[in-house]
Length: 389
Image (cartoon, rainbow, N blue to C red):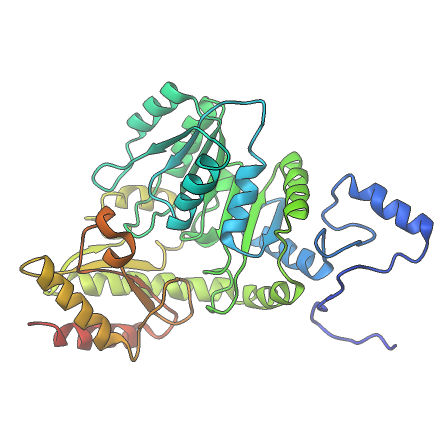
């Protein structure tokens, strides 16, 4: 067959790869004991796949990491990161910041605690910010082996002082895992500050089109890489080559897309912050946000693509009515979709998802897309004007 002069990576859909003869097969399986990222001979796509590996190399370039491993979802990446951090001989506690993705919190409660018997400590914010003093006290008290946090919390957008948190964690010998989905490597690279592992739900901004599920785990430590490759292989957390191929295409526009997302979000936040029917706006660039100072200190190129805002009202029921009316008014143009990071602007009400944790019936989490900012603002203004009852 002729070699095709294509500029694109082929999609290798092989489940198993041709090894030609017994010596080749022996070498391939002997090499597998070293868990190479890009082996001389591929064996089986659950182990490694050439299309997936090329996409991982591009993700490592974007993250600024020595390695990156793809999974079929963000939670699969979190499972790998946490599972390879486990030493069966250790009874040390693990510390999780409370303001993390709901699916991660469910994983902690229903898998780590209920099934694996882990002793978990949670660190809570006060007035929508994290006290480094209190964090250090908690570290001193419990001396956890692992610290897990998100750089920007969901949905209150609390910015963690990543450099200081990593420094304190390392003082007590903890391994640090950071979910960087909201910030992305465009504005923050936690590995540069000494974090051990970074995870993303690549479903969100890395893929960016709302039509692909993926996760990625990144790091610099070669021993953690080998453990992650082995664990992914044994539990089957491998992304399909077709999805890896599509993700590689999406990554070509990553920096352009993210710049637009984050620029639009800042403009939308400023618009909402000056609108009479809006009670509060949460966005890290706004000076009234409790962690604005931290955001300005640690972020480059922007402050994220999520804006959370709360509708005014005379009572709980009135706020709820206005929120329902707003979502209905926006629905032809900005739809309620339970995800974020899509190219289109989408939203999700906070109270129905988080309930009593955030008892704000008028609060909406807006994932700002890459449409022209004036279009997004016009749609919001017209919808907000219709609910002034």
